[in-house]
Image (cartoon, rainbow, N blue to C red; front, top):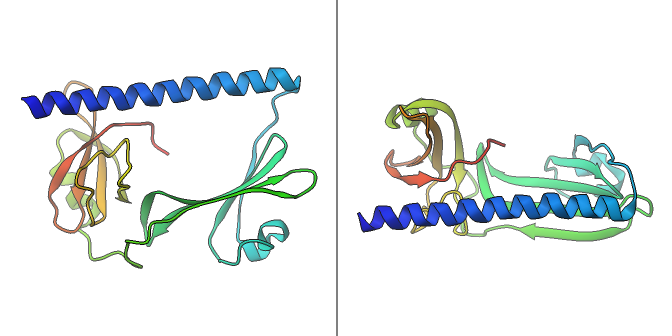
Length: 195
């Protein structure tokens, strides 16, 4: 009972932090837009390979697919790390350029070095979905981050995990975290809107 209360408490804290972050982001964005006295600009997005993009190609020599977006006075390139078809939670590469001068303003890399180059053999998605309770909405394969707020499994699993979103008989969303190699339920995550 004590463990369940602690889990519920942690979930409430994480959700509260997420809500506060969203509110602060929205308020900050609105204030910046008003302060600059500019109109809201459309966000133009596309996918690029560095060697085929003159600006990004000067700095990035990989053949990874980056999402390119024009946001305000910035050109932003982002890559979410994947190992085969598993998303590596929290690992990414981000480049930020001034839209007018094309000057590199910021480069951010977060990359774990304790992960395999390829996925080990994993249970099929259908098998993972058959383990969970409720009606399945979607499943996604992850390497869970040790700093994950939405997948707070301790100790952090070394194996990739299936995160299966389901709806229980009361209409509640449940994210079940399943070790994708061993096929065992490790715990539950905090449901957030799908990517």
